[in-house]
Image (cartoon, rainbow, N blue to C red):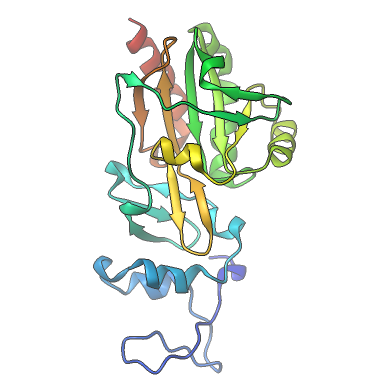
Length: 241
């Protein structure tokens, strides 16, 4: 646990409240919440725990549990209800339409992607460790993915300027789209609605065919991060067969 993620809750006159004396060492949010039954980790309690954190601290290593039963906030190490990210679009149906600004100096939309297979991946934030690993792995696999007639497109709520810095630092050859406000993430069932933090993109990957139809959704990306690009290649080959 990073020291910057520690803070003290206000004293509340309640037997169920977390009471932290100024004379005692700070207790991390993950330690407090880990002692509670999962059913007691409510949105209200989550709001109290995260209100003092920065966006970067909060989303470092954010992940989705297998089966999308819960979302795990990596820095804090606890789960929140799956209702924070839900509503996946239907597979084998037209993918939700969108048009977003990119780090390539132009808007990119679903209509621009038609004619090729597309690996559309949503992620929490530029420069966080998990997102850097994922982007680098996609870049390493980009030649193999393009050999299959597919293009890679990343999406997060980061600004175009931050995407420019991220792509430049890691030499990314594929576009990154800026979904500030998270509206497209919501359309794709990838939006995390976090109290006091706004809307962010969960780590999920979508394969769209040349006709613009959604053909596959990877929801458990975080636990398989190191092999995810290889799994995307394998799924592309399967879908194209």
